[in-house]
Length: 193
Image (cartoon, rainbow, N blue to C red; front, side, top):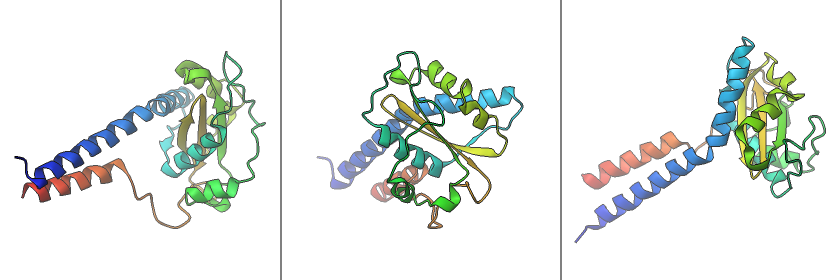
C-alpha cells in the first residue's frame, strides 16, 4: 500500500502539471500575437517588445471589463481605436495589479474584438489600424497581452517612470511558473528523503 508521502507527492505533482499545462494553453493567443507584433516591429527595424507581467495583469483587468460584450463585426474588430469606453472603476483595476496612475499614465491600452480570436485578424487589428502608431513608437519597450472571449487587450509600457508599470508596492508578483517548479522540487526532495 502506498505511503502518505507517496500519495501526497503524486497529488502535488499532478497539481503542478495541471497548472503549468493550463498556463501554456491559455497563453497561446497572447504568445502568437506577441510574436506577430515583434515580427512587425522587426520589419520596421524597431526593437522587440518584452513581456511586462504587470502590464499583462492590467490587460487582463481590462479584458475582464469587456467579458460578455458581443463582438458584432464578423470581419474583424468592432472597436475603433480611440473610442474605447472609460471605466469608472479604473483606479480599482490598477490597484488589483498593484499599480497606480503615476506609473501607467503614458501607456497605450488597446482593446480589440475579433470573433474566435482568429490569429491573422487579431494581428491585422493591431498592425493595420490606428493602433499601429503606438506599435511603431520607439518609446514603447514592454507589452502585456490578455484575452477574454472574443476580446484581446494589448497594453504597451515604456522604461520611463510614467508608464513602466512597476509594482506600486515595490514587491513583484508572488506567483510565477518558476516558483511553482521550485516548490514542486522542494516537495519532491522532502517526500523522497
